[in-house]
Amino acid sequence: MAAKWTMITGASEGLGAEFARIAAAEGHDLILVARQADKLERLAEELRQRHGIAAEVWPTDLSDPEAVETLWRKVALRRHVEVVVNNAGLGYNGPFAAESFEREKASVMVNVVALTILTKRAVTHMLRQGGGRILNVASTASFMPGPNMAVYHATKAYVLSLGEALAVELGATPVRVTTLCPGATATNFAADAQMQQIVLFSSLPVASAHSVARAGWRAMKRGRRLCVPGPINKLVALSSALAPRWLSARIAGRFLAAPAAGDRAAAD
Ligand SMILES: NC(=O)c1ccc[n+]([C@@H]2O[C@H](COP(=O)([O-])OP(=O)(O)OC[C@H]3O[C@@H](n4cnc5c(N)ncnc54)[C@H](OP(=O)(O)O)[C@@H]3O)[C@@H](O)[C@H]2O)c1
Image (cartoon, rainbow, N blue to C red):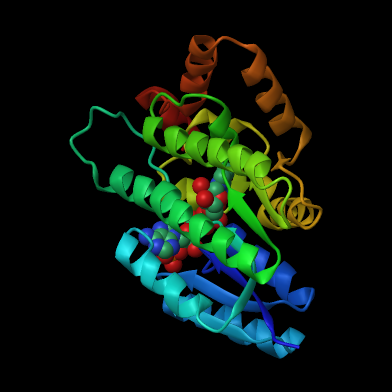
């Protein structure tokens, strides 16, 4: 029987590396994607040794749509891709009015454009192959506008909307799309997005990457439409659905604001 492959983006660290460990433990052959080739190679070797699976490393900058199309063309050529985990993502915490724009642009390209290309290509490939599973990583940020993190929240609202629409469109087919909406999770994400000092990460419980990846993986295997791991995150999703949008935005803005200089000094 031909091997069936699982592609995981953003597999060099954080949630993506955890998805890879969980998938490998279940015997999946892996296609690992991110920019940091050395980290991907170390993880691939660890998983080959421990689980006897095949693991290929595909270093790719997902902010380049041409590179994403090329990646998919090469990966899907003569391979049966059974699972795609669109996990790679980044954010930026800071005022929209700031001059800098590179990180916000990269967020749109990776979180939205690359994810859409890979979802589109995977859906058509999987329909031809007779089935498959797609797990798209969104966020609790999907449920509300995010003042001081406006672009990131907008990208994650897109991921949720796309996934919910596809879950209906593909309902009668053997292809399932699951959207995972984690809250604050212990990875490199917060430091990378300059979020460590904000209320969200400094005063609310932060989940382990393994527990979040495990919840998302299970939901994906069961063909669930949506997974919001943890009771606090479920409450956030529910209250955002009930509250007026302007109020959700105001409250989110409190959690996303940088602490005042005095508060920051006291925390250090
Ligand atoms: N941690 C949280 O609190 C949290 C909460 C909600 C949702 N999420 C979402 O969870 C997902 C995973 O994030 P994480 O928490 O595991 O963060 P992380 O530890 O910072 O990992 C992010 C991953 O994305 C990859 N990536 C970033 N830019 C890329 C690019 N241009 N091309 C290819 N790969 C790129 C990184 O790989 P390279 O640097 O090697 O390219 C890395 O593997 C993201 O979609 C994030 O939005 C995280």
